[in-house]
Length: 96
Image 1 (cartoon, rainbow, N blue to C red):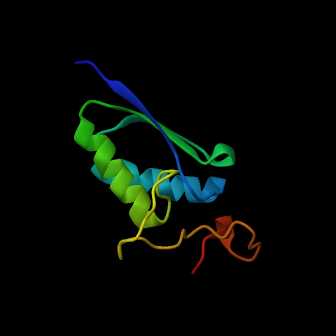
Image 2: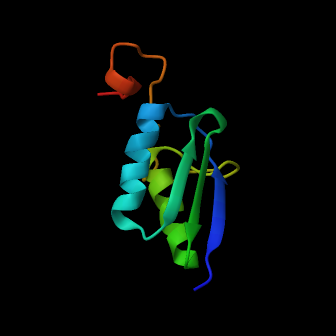
């Protein structure tokens, strides 16, 4: 089976700890492979077999507060990103 590669730059930055949370959420429901997150570039890269897998990942990212760069989000399903990297009080900078 042939696979594709998706490179998704997201609007909001995230830290290493938040990257693990995002990664777990994406891998929980999706059949994507080789998922790599690049926090310093706000970039998410993965291999996929079906186009609907990319769509589902985009939906998950938007719900977590990391919509794709260039998207204008106006739906009620969008939240602010949970990453508050500047906070040194929380482990990994995750907001409570």
